[in-house]
Image 1: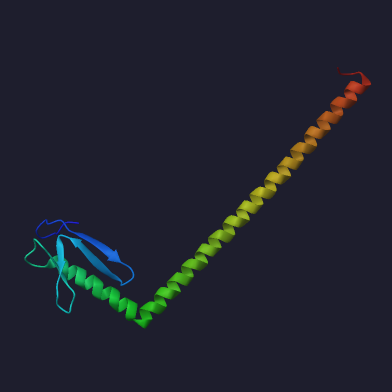
Image 2 (image 1 turned 90 degrees about the vertical axis):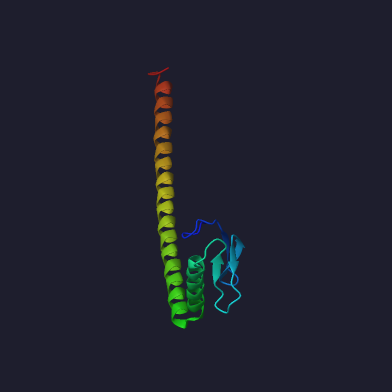
Length: 128
């Protein structure tokens, strides 16, 4: 990424275990209790303010019981939707498979009739 204020390039990785960010290059973490970061080329610290706000929001969401409950409800709803999609897909696949079997059986029966008719015509001498 680049700093919107000074154009300095910096690299940040996410740290899912701690729900935070790891500053790789071009940016330094502040030693203050707010855990903000400032761009090495930025005298205003806008990037640090943004990252600090995002990190604070993530921490609040992780600790907030209402947020946790709503996130769990959203995840359960997502799982139910995925299950309904899978059920519909399995039904379509089963119907298609049954249609394939029925079509194949009808084709085999038609070919069997043709062979029997041909054999009967040859036996009667009406066909060589």
